[in-house]
Picture (tube, rainbow, N blue to C red):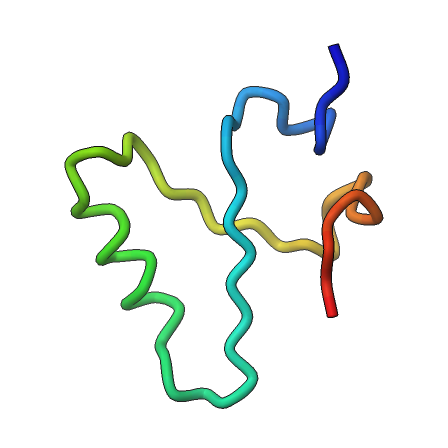
Length: 59
């Protein structure tokens, strides 16, 4: 089985959030996601530390 990010194969979904306008607090956004009963956990990742970061679409 192939994984998008092999070193993070225990995660099912990835949501890349970038706010270039500084209008949204990422911390607040993560807090709101964490409160959703349908989401088990929310993890903030530092993309620069991911070995397979070339698999992600970043602009």
